[in-house]
Length: 189
Image (tube, rainbow, N blue to C red; front, side, top):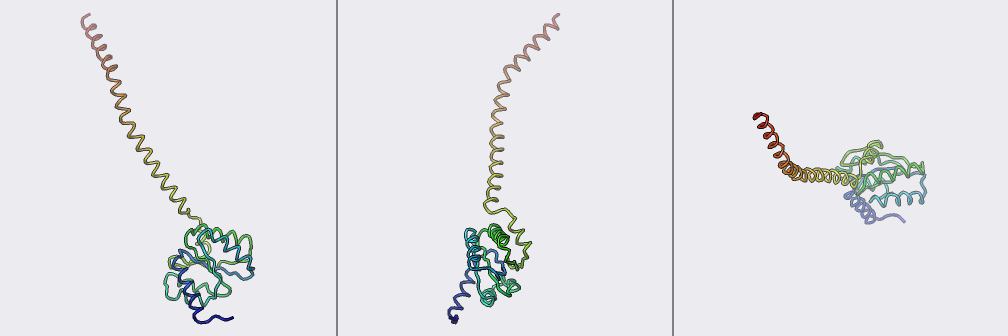
């Protein structure tokens, strides 16, 4: 059964909606992949907040036509194309695809688009190697905790050193009096 005009418009609207939520989109050649393998890829991508869409290139071309951010994707629209649209965790999504590609050896990365820039596979891998949002938050929290700890130790040291100084006054006073007495005895002799 062919698609009617309303059905095509709905597919394009769905693609536009997915693209509006995406941070990164990349195009892969899915030729030679079975339905089970595409399902496996989708299952690997789902926990990362990503979607793998298999649709006609003309539908994707119409979906990105009016959006400057995604227009570079038109360079990759040829042959059998699947589109991975990454919403949240870019690094995890790219790593999930890389693991799938390594396991199946049947797919080819064509290119990606992020913030209006066309990206090659090495650039997308470099993005994947960046720390995740959770790792960055942990690093920032650790740095803040380190500063707070050092500040607390420094603040605690002020009264401690003042207390040691006050405790030293009587014994220092005793040494001074003893030294003065010894000096007077030495002067008297």
